[in-house]
Image (spheres, one colour):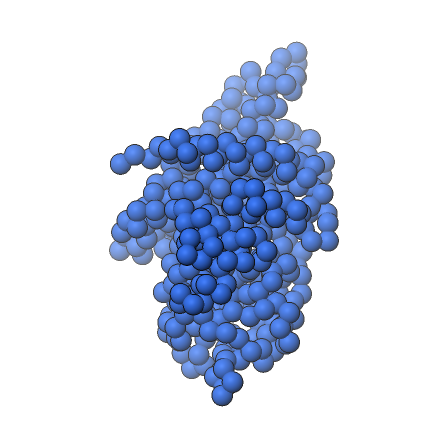
Length: 376
């Protein structure tokens, strides 16, 4: 078992980091989040055309590059480090993941190429008011008519729902409960009857929206009433992508804190020479390295389709988001008063860390999933 990345994978990481250092630096991130779109369309286009990021894990037969989960995790780690304000997680990990896992070959051929080339942004509409990321939280209903399927109901806090071109929607057959009767559909964002209400998010680098469907015609994705299995697989894979992104963010926090401790002088010496600051930095390092090991192991399990993936995916999500939160808090502590200011990036990282903790369910939710997977 070798967890080392290949030379080609490390070269990909280097190229991506160079791109993000130029296109997603602090100034660029702030310009993007203050814009009307919330992201820079030019950066999104170049991510696709210059780096092929959107095509990474999409099969070659459907316009993608056909790489594996390891390359995808590298991309998410670097995007997390850069705090990139791009709808990448929503489009690639959630929406495209659901299409790959649930769709027929014809459906994949119709939907994936425009995602792979960067011309389409997609969002997964799953969570509802008062509900979570589990099957029991899905209440939006679908009905079948002579013309096809119609959706009626509301979805809440749809990630990047305010900028998506289309939605992958999880709906339920009336009268069913739990994992039964769940079907996936696709709906254009501009379809008649779709109402999108943007929400202000804690994480300023991502968009959120409440989406209401009022008798909206929908296109079936996959098999009727068999949508939960591919959706659950998608969420499990996405949790590892989010874990890797959190590792990147945690590493950024550690790097910022260590650099500041070297240059900030108090009582005639760098604050990094004080034992309390050293201990804080070392604690952050331990959290980051432990999280990285968990994320990489989960990525390997996904890449190899290892049966342990159902165990290590929730482990990685809980471990990595906890580490990101701890590193983000430690970063603010080491920076002191300046770490609380709007002008400093520390609060942006803390916002992302807190949002990542809640996204797909918090750490306690994933520890419960881990316990279930272990049979305890």
